[in-house]
Picture 1 (cartoon, rainbow, N blue to C red):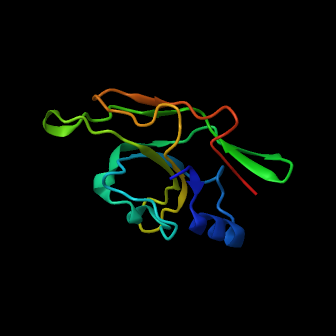
Picture 2 (picture 1 turned 45 degrees about the vertical axis):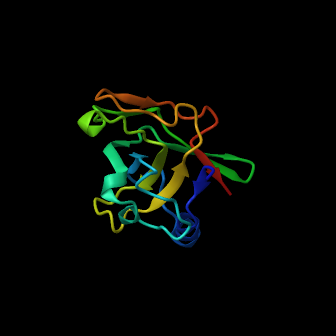
Amino acid sequence: MANTLYPKFKQTHAATGIGLVSNTIKAQLVDTSAYTYSDAHQFLSSVPAAARYGNPATLLNKTVSLSGTTAVFDADDSLFTSVPAGSSGTTDKEEAIIIYRDTGDPTTSDLIYYIDTATGLPVTPNGGNIVVSWNASGILSFS
């Protein structure tokens, strides 16, 4: 699976516009042994709680800029704090990151972007902090 926008986000964005800068946008570490990406997924509730590892990171200082007809979304690098190590001595790896609009309710929190190909992935939590340095050209782009 390559990094991709969730199709339902594209559909919703085209219809109503999701304010990437004005809304609370979060990043969540994901264990792909407990979650499989699907084009049909629209809300965070489609991602099993067991696949969502640690607490999500709120994206800060978000921007959307235009490069020709392409919108580029970016934010400061993200800090996931005190990400738990695997249980019973196992070394759980988080192989993906999901970007989503947080409404406070997983059944209405829109999935935006699925990342499984990036420097530093997979990551093995050890109980410490994990810093995600977003690509210098932006987190995602779309037209």
